[in-house]
Every structure is written in structure tokens, then in C-alpha cells.
Image (tube, rainbow, N blue to C red; front, side, top):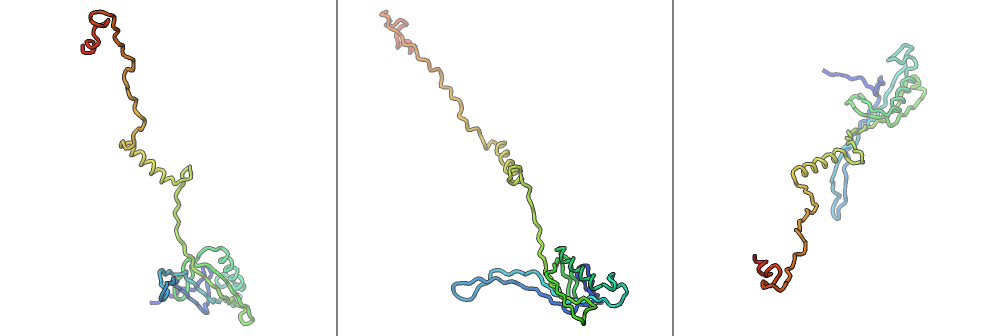
Length: 202
């Protein structure tokens, strides 16, 4: 079973596509060395490119695909508006479905032979979309999550006793009063209060 998909340029249906140019390119970086051939250290796929040569007819006076007798002019305005939005869209071709495409250029060549149709060439390129991640900042302009982690580490260290009070303890140096020296008063014991040696030894 074969499923034929109608050609479309975003929301604009295409009656006929005269030509399709599909381009998929791989970029290979080359670095020169002192001797011998250049060496390859990296390769990456470039955005897909697509060139279409569609035809949108305006035959007859009846309404066709919603455009009527002014269908080519209305289709051209829709394609211009699609380009101006700068919003990625899908393109259905005879080979594959392209996603995230933007219109780079539109060329319309009007000659008497095709004055009743819109025959144009459109160049499209794939847009590479990546996701970004943001981290809320704290009041002082730093990383709030990092600040909370640092605070948590400090609290854990304090709770575990790793951080101690570095203030010098008060040292009790005792009584610094000058001791009383016994005085010799001429008594037989040699001092008023007895022998100095006796007082010391008890």
C-alpha cells in the first residue's frame, strides 16, 4: 500500500512541485599538522536545506482550496506572511517530511506563459532548536541553590562540633598579692612571729 501525502508549504497547499532540491551536508573539520595531510578531529551535520519549485494554479472562476479566481495572488500573500512570522513550520515533500523549517528566500518569475499561475522558487533551511535551563539567582546576585548548599554544609559542620570557639579562655593566675615577710624583733625566736624557717616549715 502506498500513502501519497499532498505537498504543502506549512499551511499553504501546493498543486504541483516541478522540482525539489534536497541537501544534507556533513561538515568535517580539518587541522594541519607539521608533516603529512590534514587531520580530522570533528564532524557535524549542518542544518538541512531544501529548494522547491512549486506551482499554484488559478484556473477557472470557481473557488479552489479557498482562493477562488485570485488564488495565485492570495497564495503569494500567505507565503510572504509565513516567511515574516519567522516561526518554524513543517514542509511535506515527495521524499520526506521536514520539521522546523524557515523560508530564506522567495523568487517569483512572472512571464506571459505562466501569468495565470503562481510559479515560484523557495529556499528553506532547517532551524536547530535547543533547550535552555535557567537557575534562579539569590538576592545578592549569586546562585541561590549554591548558597543554600554552602549554608547547609556550614550548619552541619557547626552541629558536629567541627567549628569551635577560637576565643582564648580566661586564665586564673591566682592571688598575686605580695606575701608578708616576718620582721625580726630581737626576741629569742629571732622574729616577732617566730623563726622564719619555722613559719615556712610549720
